Image (cartoon, rainbow, N blue to C red; front, side):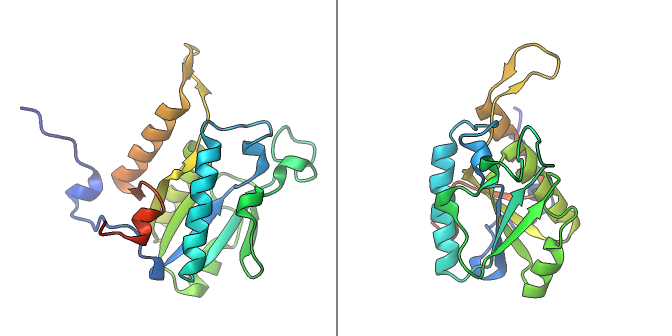
Length: 205
């Protein structure tokens, strides 16, 4: 009888609970119009925005430091043109006064930014990630977070991705498959995955 697969984290006996709010910082990654009405519309983005808004409200309620991280390409680029309309933050996720906004130019939010030093200055050792896109900037940032010494939680319903061409040219890989496979890969070693914001509000529930 074949046993069920186990993650590397399970095999190592690592703590599998979600990141506690009182020890975490929230990273909202690329919550920008490019993914809604721009060049890179995501499958299920409306639901992911709504869940990210619930997560943001939860973080604010509990005094969790919030980092809004946006992507800027070069002016005139096909996507994330900083001078164009789609680099703007999605209205439902607008930063409040006092919340940090960082600009990045690579998928990994730590690359070329002072994100790590800013989080260190707050004394937070855990991260909660939400935003876009699952397979790209969420994955790259979660993987880099491990290298920087953080324990990370990704909120499943507060991220989304898009269909991609099959790498061998044979059709299309559906966004749902990419989303699930990316989160499964992160859960093997890099992050806890929780269903939604409610799982962070009530970890025992």
